[in-house]
Image (cartoon, rainbow, N blue to C red; front, side, top):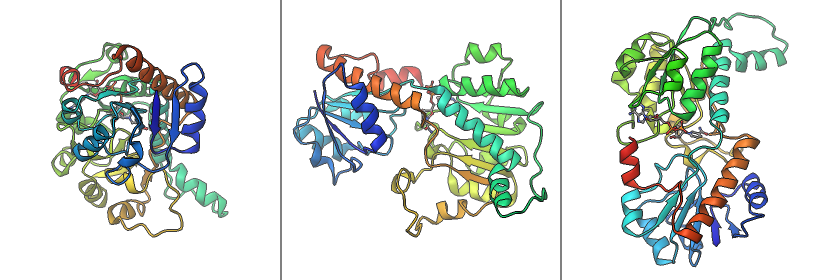
Length: 337
Ligand code: NAI
């Protein structure tokens, strides 16, 4: 199938071309994100391949349909950027990569926890300046601390397993308890109870209408004072302005985030020569107890290989049979969420 690949970075091209060997798709790589301004690039391509910050709202979908596109292959797990009802109305097949490496995201999550707790980001900079003082670097033992995991699916379950290894007490909040987590001793509680008890809160639920701004001024009030908050799910699961207020008041002790609600204009690009005009992001970067990474939690060799292989297979399955086990439909999603 002819595929227009959007938001292409050199590593995407390398892994997608390598995985294409047995499939023989004709892939054309475009660097820009898919937006209403760039959607005409997809004209005449039966399939588009997109990533987390490509926009697939109603106007873009209409343009793609007019240009003859029928398949949308997401090379990610989340699909919050697709207007699914409109996609279905226009007859698109939407496929995603539901699982590639939960380990990649879970390990990055734990990296953020360790970095923030032991202030490794500050120690790194300090030691390079010849400052070997320990003032301000005091951490706590993870052993015995309570970790609250919101969303205990594939990634949340791996985080649970790793944190159990540190000797943490595990609390979970999910619509569906995960037996693998219960075996680790996880106790399922309400979100309120989790917020009240957890020393570390880590978010691994998808972005849905129900989880948008799950962490807001009210829920922050219910947190244990000084709690660490980690978000590697989707930016809009937290109300970033409310989180900044929580950091300023000390209610939130530290913040690790790999995703940001307004990340699309910044993440994945080298903007080091430019001024950051997003004042919320700029403010976040001033806190000593905040670590921001640019949506890199997925970024391991294993994950990129699995994403590329599943994406090529998804497109082949739709081309040959009109079906894919990785198809996203609003019916299936409603069933799950
Ligand atoms: P998953 O579908 O296996 O697990 C998500 C879990 O969240 C499910 O158990 C679901 O029941 C639960 N959930 C849904 N609504 C909830 C709610 N209102 N409250 C509590 N739990 C709720 O998904 P997976 O693979 O674990 O990924 C989770 C999310 O991580 C993805 O949706 C995506 O947004 C994000 N992600 C981020 C990456 C990164 O690079 N930062 C890479 C991959 C995924």
